[in-house]
Amino acid sequence: MQPDMIQAEGLTHYYGPYPAIQDVSFGVRKGEILGFLGPNGAGKTTTMRIITGFMPPTHGKVTLDGYDVVEQSLEARRRVGYLPETVPLYTDMSVNSYLKYMGTLRGMSPKAIKARLGEVIDVCRLGDYRKTQIGKLSKGFRQRVGIAQAIIHEPQVLVLDEPTIGIDPIQVVETRRLIKELGKDQTVVLSTHILPEVSMLCDRVLIINEGKIVAEDTPKNLAAGLQGVDRLEVEVGGPAAEVLPVLKAIRGVNEVAHTNNDGRHTYTIQAESGQDLRDAISQAVISNGWSLRGLQMVGMSLEEIFLRLTTHEEL
Amino acid sequence: MRTVQAVAWKEIQIYFSSPTAYIVGLIFLALTGFFFTQDLGNPFPEATLVPFFDGAIIMFILLAPALTMRLLAEESKLGTIELLLTSPVRDWEIIIGKYVASLTFFLALVILSFFYAALLFVFADPDPGPIYAGYLGFILYGAAALSVGLLTSTMSSNQIVSAVVAMGILLAMFFADRAFGSVSGLAGEIIGEMGVRGHFDDFSRGVIDTTNIVYFLSVVVFFLFLSIRTLESRRWR
Ligand SMILES: Nc1ncnc2c1ncn2[C@@H]1O[C@H](COP(=O)(O)OP(=O)(O)O)[C@@H](O)[C@H]1O
Ligand SMILES: [Mg+2]
Image (tube, each protein chain N blue to C red):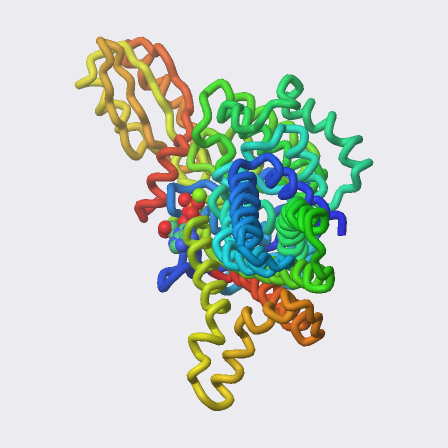
């Protein structure tokens, strides 16, 4: 098995007396897109700043492609492209000269920069703005310039801190497309507090809250299996007062919730883990002479999982 | 090396396109011109640049910090320091690059002020020794003042704070010998030795003493070293 591209062990960071993150450990495989999901103040930015070598952790250790980000900082930093949350840019420079400058700082030769610049501008769709002063660009375009500087030196690891925050919805779509594309051949670590974003982009997600990792899985598993409950939604044409007890009586059903939307009666059923109750439910409905108008399995939404995980509720 | 060059070049471009730098340059040339003509207006004009250099030194207590305050404070404020410090760039490369840029702009000002010296040579018959020595002293003083300003710019993300603190340090250095001249014993002597005046006056009198050159160069090295350490320590905060 290949060693992990990023290996973080027991990261703890104190800004003052309180730890911003505590004992955070994780690994990121080569080519993987890993998402950090957590509310504001959870410790996402702190973690990103540590893995990019911006600051050393109070305790713990990170290696990047085998290089310790503190001890072998330069080697590690050579392999990282980073887009900080604030998208820092020199607003009085043009897109072209900014990217050239950043390329030079990342150790590229003028020749290498010349060869790569066009590519990056194409990938980030900045073609019409090469000569534009960065300060005059919209937020969405600045975000792209920010991503462009992060990938100009073709880093092995791309770290993006809340890459879609504060830009308009159309630009969000564009930025996500770009990240998805970059993730095809790069290791990407991104953070977000937007739940659907991780299911859209990430191979794996770490949920972080109050400085601790509270869950780790694929977005799909988090949404389906993890909570040990399978859910079904059934729409039944029949008197709710009679339907409810019948559904509850089915073996394997834990809980039934009823909603009435203008005469459309929908029942949300929590089933015991691992049981497929669709046949039992449809038989029960039909044998009572009611009509079965819809039946589908629904996973828990990430929002719900998130709430459960972070409010310390029993799963 | 390429990194130092890139950092320096970027800052130099900013100097030559920023109003602050031009205002500083203008004030510098106007005021030194004023000192210069004042002296020529004397009934018994001495053909020297002593008042010019004295004026320039005092002005540079105010002007050097204005030239350097942006250098790192702005990076902290914009957040671009985060990109700088996560690039495979050594901390000293950043500091030296920034320093070289400020020194370049300063030297450009010095070259413009050669105009006054040229006037002196055209209309009078000055002793060239003190003028060459004075220029050397002034350049050394400027180099030292800029290194002080660079340090304070590294310490704060607020340009004004950075400038004011630098002015404070430069003033203290300027008056060190006078303020502590009364302190007797070794302490007084050491502090006196740290004063700028004593080391500069030799130059404008036409004396090039190696100790004075070493003094100014040590100041530069000391403050650049502190700047590099300060930048490093930012990571640990
Ligand atoms: N520079 C700082 N100084 C002091 N506290 C900080 C600093 N940066 C972050 N914090 C604190 O650390 C915690 C984690 O912050 P952060 O990593 O920025 O979270 P996130 O990026 O998930 O919003 C928060 O409680 C925040 O207030
Ligand atoms: Mg953050």
